[in-house]
Length: 180
Image (tube, rainbow, N blue to C red; front, side, top):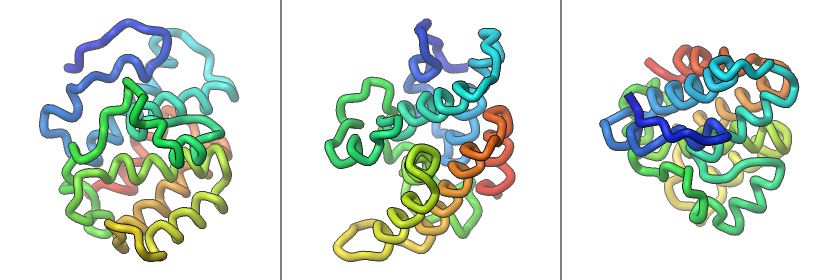
């Protein structure tokens, strides 16, 4: 069980537990999203239109180190390097993801959630264009069809969240669409 640090936001509750116990990529995504969604239930917060953006931001702080409508500016300026809640990349082997999403790296939660957040905040067209450019235009490193497919699934989840998917359904959606 993770150590919980009392605070005002759900992103403050995640510690190094998930990255230090051998958690795989799909499990990391499912657990962090389930934990963030449970924060709204356990503290009696009403689920309202403002809860979804806060949920996306809570998970974003942890998995990608940046959040909000200025996420593309944050990416360009390296904001994740200064976020104390960011768990980093390279900790989660992709062995529990479907083969189409396995590229052999340990950064798939970062890759996936980045496109969820961009799609949610900036729209699916912007996110999809970014995914295609990132994976298809040289001289980017780490390009792969698996990353392109996973990024497209992130764009889809971001669009679903924009359209009203419940934050309490996200963990199950990840397990049913990304994991084997």
